Amino acid sequence: MSDLHDKTVTELAAALRARQVSSVELTQALLERVTRHQGALNAFITISAEGALLEAARADARLGANDAGPLTGVPMAHKDLFCTRGEKTTCGSRMLADFVSPYDATVVERLRAAGVVMLGKTNMDEFAMGSSNETSFFGPVKNPWDPARVPGGSSGGSAAAVAARLVPAATGTDTGGSIRQPAALCGVTGLKPTYGRVSRYGMVAFASSLDQAGLITRSAADAALLLGAIAGFDERDSTSVELPVPDYSAALEQPLKGLKIGVLKEFFDTGLDPAIEQHIRAALELLRSQGALIKDVSLPNLPLSVPTYYVVAPAECSSNLARFDGVRYGYRCKKPTDLLDLYLRSRGEGFGAEVKRRIMTGTYVLSAGYYDAFYLKAQRVRQLISNDFERAFHEVDVVIGPTTPTAAFELGAKTADPVTMYLNDIYTIGANLAGLPAISLPCGLTQGLPAALQIIGPHFGEERLLNVAHRYQLETDWHRRAPPGFA
Ligand code: GLN
Image (cartoon, rainbow, N blue to C red):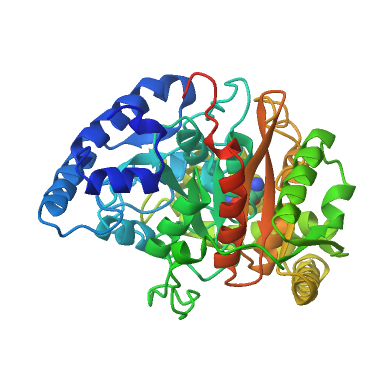
């Protein structure tokens, strides 16, 4: 079979079951691609050739014995903050550069049980803090559409790998946009599920009330298939929700007639690239022609989401990252003189600049005297933003807007000014603050770079999001376009 690398998960699953290709052949072909493009893209931190081939052989045995599920033998990669037994989990940090987890994250465990083959661990912003993948200790990832540009972050390695056809799908995590934003900048599909829909167990914590595991794929249909495998209650994560997991693939084709779509007024007000706006308006027209009803909705508190997030997320990170103390695991400085020196130098040498900035901001907003002025106020505004969304979902079924204000920017363009970098998350953060599911889809090209639209739904509304996304992808081919040189 040719063009294996260009096939979606759904297509590969069918080819494996029809024995048109074996999992070992597929794994070898993709490993060769991963290795060939590693120098140019830096999408991976660990390439797990040996483990992958063993898993593939096991998958082939299951396929041969008719003991296979729909994902058996399909290769994937994991963002390097999902714990994986036997392979490093670095979180893109010097702090964990040599850390090997003794257990699998629930997401990894479920995909392994489904027979998915793990090709490796993808590069990311350090501890998932970033919007450009430039904070990784292992160097930046390059955008396959233009290697002088960023892939977005923090799941930039996953998005670049899926866009460059190195893997058909990869996991990601989204605390303030880290699945949707890199998916948008790399021209692939990124799904952030509802908070609580997918277990966070074994996902190294950044900001626990916002972090959510999800998927980067080349189609909404693939995201549906994979979400079914990773979603569901996990007693090891007390915030995972005990709700049955629907058959996401079954609802994909549902007609859009009568669907009420809200166009998010605030998302079109501020600094949106006109070329991206045009592509989104065209997408809305297409959805209207399929019977959807389009109306404007306003979420007046949404413009406060960036400052709110940049209080809440650093506060939680300052607490979560306190565990990296040079004692239990992770980086330890050389020859500490006493306990305090051990703490200070291990953390000082182990963490990069952005992580330190967040820890300091977080510690400040939580400190006595400032707690009420910053942290408590941010929590209140967070509630107002949630209420805005809730009101909107009384009127419409989903809301649509852009994922990012611009297409991929040049490497280094925003590294000198953290606030400019943070503003890149302006359209994605709202869904995290409110715990809502959201999906980003490619909807055009502007000067040769992908543009994306975002669909946000009510809690546990993944079926509807995937349905709208799939119907859009049935009528368009933006998601089928490969970056030049990677087809
Ligand atoms: N870019 C945002 C940040 O830097 C979001 C990151 C994320 O979703 N992990 O915090």
